[in-house]
Image 1 (cartoon, helix red, strand yellow):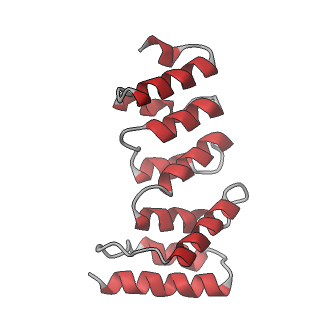
Image 2 (image 1 turned 90 degrees about the vertical axis):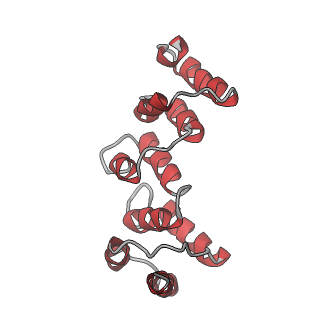
Length: 153
């Protein structure tokens, strides 16, 4: 699709949205998640048929990446499996750019009573929880949630 490589960001974003509506966005369009244009990255993040791996998304939220790439990688992480979502929130809870959004997402999970998956939480979540500076009630609830998830296995 030649319009995906157009020099104009508005054209690239429109091409992504059009292909998405047609159900024709190719998986290889994932390379556009690091496009210099915020509007293109947002369109790609919302349209990808298969999100990049959580490991790749964690690379994309790392400090030093463009803010629009970090925001959209974070959005993808928080719209994936629950343990991935919680891990991303804990990892970024103290981040100067994404910390507020991460803590808000954790509060929303606690408020809405996030349903536990049937798989145990990855061990690194406990480490992320120890390092994150959260208000005590939220931290206590997440400790209970992680403990309950570990007991399900």
